Length: 402
Image (cartoon, rainbow, N blue to C red):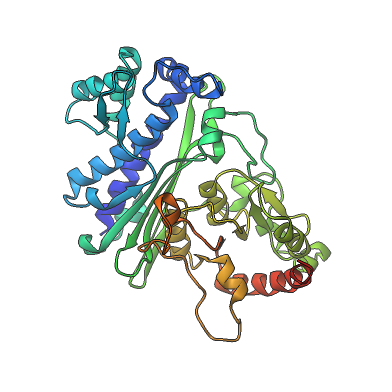
């Protein structure tokens, strides 16, 4: 139902407003910077403020969707618990109240009487947001609501969010760190099959007005359902990035560097040495490091790189579902890296796409929702097959010595 996607775009923008307000409004920013002082966390606060921002965003998304689509709120899942205990030992359930005044009172309890911060936060939480996209308005798709589940990552790349660096330079359009790496991720999946159907990635901090220091963001979305694939308009790579990028380089296949290293990839700074060594043979110098699983996936969506590869098991369903849905709408996807490396390419079996409806057997807590085998995000199936064959060729001798 494209009505659900329209509403998700609105709530993602409201969530982005909350994220921006916490950095731009003085009363809130003072709480946020408490998080920087490691080891000397302010004992006044019932909860670290970053967690409160996370939970508020998650609850705003849940409550807004429940109001418009009764029953859907129960099927929205995320990392954060909405239960806090304040200095008086009172248990407080954080939720979005019907009125701004009631939300102020509730926040006041969580923030131990910081009225100024509570009022500033409640105001932005209750602000109406209008968001429209002509591409989405042109279609009407009915997806039965009772078949849907939703994964939410309210503020992905929280370290970058708290650190708040605004002056990081991009490398061929890709930011290694900084506020640009912060994303709000909402992914909708089929609860029977686990297939991602709709995705929204909101990037709250894209460009800053140097006079007012206010930030503007950008929102990307995709829908893939029963043969209908549609996604938000993506500007040409050249307008997003003044430097030479992969898309422009590949237009000249006779280039020697392009011939020997046909792929570009974005990776985590914590990637394993074996993967980095093999990647350097496949991609040459066209390997980029960046913060945030959501942001690295977005780099693939935007065509800034061909591949996002991660071999660890420290991303979760809420990190990958949104981008996976958008990539599906574009003809790409997100696969389990470990299964890809173990798969016989001549078996004729489909690529092992990540699914979102079942947890990992035997795992507890958040680990049950980890992407256990790592992942690869890609824009083109053919391109992925070629990339995997090259990667396997270069990984084999490394593995033989371990």
